Length: 195
Image 1: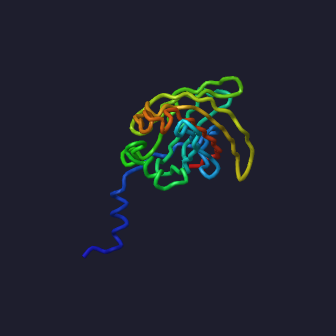
Image 2: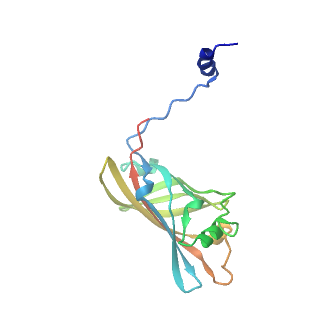
Image 3: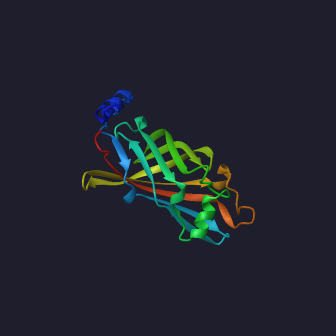
């Protein structure tokens, strides 16, 4: 019988080498989920605006104020974090009439272009939602910066999408729900942990 003392050496011999982690740059940030918000608004029955939220958002942003065109934005929102204050309605939104979260568990955004626009930024990227991908452009404004348990910076964006572009046609024909959805994203960014 082989000695149990030899097992750690066996596992060490079988382990694969790992690539070194990329260093954190001066202009790298990550989303602080606890202080960030994703709110959506859609017309209900052609009468009132209805609001809901996604409770979870994560992502990484690289942004040099002196050269914003070299930056990037990557965001991810779990569909199961949708909250409209009604569990039955939330389950419907997660189902095949809308997001189909079993097949498309996350909403993803990857920037393709960042340009300075006055005091704001114009961010263009691909929005991957409900199994379909479409380009969107949004105006992003800086809301503040400071130091609270480390450096922090805030940004806010508002933009519109059409549900039908992403195959979510439920309720449009009978005006039960509007096709246009307004999205408001407020991000508080913190520095990633040093790797």
